[in-house]
Length: 486
Image (cartoon, rainbow, N blue to C red; front, side, top):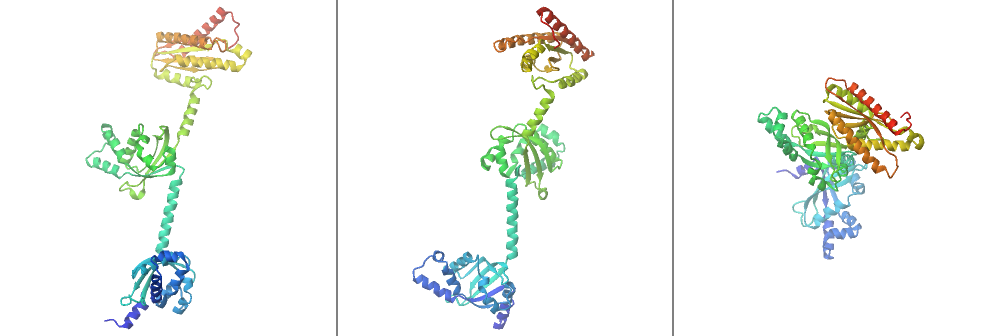
């Protein structure tokens, strides 16, 4: 049986800080408060903060061990006890009230986390365990207090929390839409068909398009950031997630099929342009980047998807493309498109190809006498006439100042003459419409030619051009108008 000397050695050389204390004065103080009618100790202490100090003054330290001196940087027990006000200070009030309340409630063995300070000012995060020793429950004159230094663990946890908060802040405040998703169920589906011996995934999804829809339904959205809510017009995450089918629809089926194909081929990082929809129904052009996180390649249960709204860029690109192929004034195709398309038709057809070369009569006098704004108004009217008269696959173009052309693929002479008549009808309606506004009559000279397979399209264009000039000359002869170079 261990002797008292053995117990003293165990106390002295224990690897954690141990304090042997006398709480009998505290017990007496509690008894006096109870006699005075105090029921709720916490409320009583919070009412007068000096009462906490009064309680602490009742605690008497009988002995500390070597680990305690080392932990607090004290030269001796006397050194430590003379400077306890440096050890127990600042942010200890709440933990002390908790410990006092445990004793008040009769809990004579409990633990708590608190803060102490070494004599050199170092902050110490400690786990405290208080035990009224057996045989002393009636007096509290022997209490063993152990302190476990958890400073490094607390600091590590704080760093982890700070890192998480920092990462969360980056996620939430990212200027692009971010989605955290779980693709693990999609992986299970892909693994299943692979295990069934399917090797040609492209053919498989063509035969079974419902598999794509099933995979889309198995994606679980874990989180989205603020920019996602703004981009898609959702008030909160619940509204967004409840309307996912409104966001990813129509064209997204084909895009997701490509995404599945890449995953099947082991491509865990992807990017592509896709179409999504805001909750308002507005179409969004999106640049999507997709990545299975490195440590989740075996499960696909954590995937980061970023979406950048490129709708404005797409509109700008479309407008630039439009400008490259259209005349700004009349909204018809321009000469560059005309030349490029004629080259293509001359190589590939479809035959026969008919062309109408059109020139506006009397533009130069209008420009000279009334100004170019009046002339531009007439040119816009030509654009209106030709736009209404010509249907696909035919198309009209402005190929010069007052020169226009209509190209009619897969159209013979009879069809070309029908188009001339239709333009004449539209021209008559246009003149009637504008009669009460400007009083100016729009007049066009039109030449027509047709090119069969094996013939030169340029030759047909020259024939149409000559026919147009003959009609223009006839117009000036019949009207008696002075012809100026126009």
